[in-house]
Length: 64
Image 1: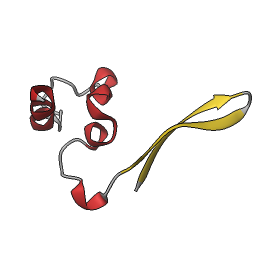
Image 2: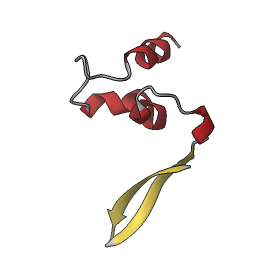
Image 3: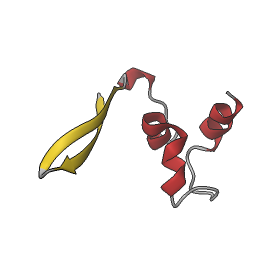
């Protein structure tokens, strides 16, 4: 699976990053963290709530 970020520059869509993610390696944990890394948490409304599905993966990534 490809995860892509894009911006509009001069009325054209420009890919700013492309990441290939093996679907077989995805877990049930927060997919946004698996795609974007901890950057995904900055704007997540579920951060530090019971709805957060990435608490365990956040702890592991913060230890690294």
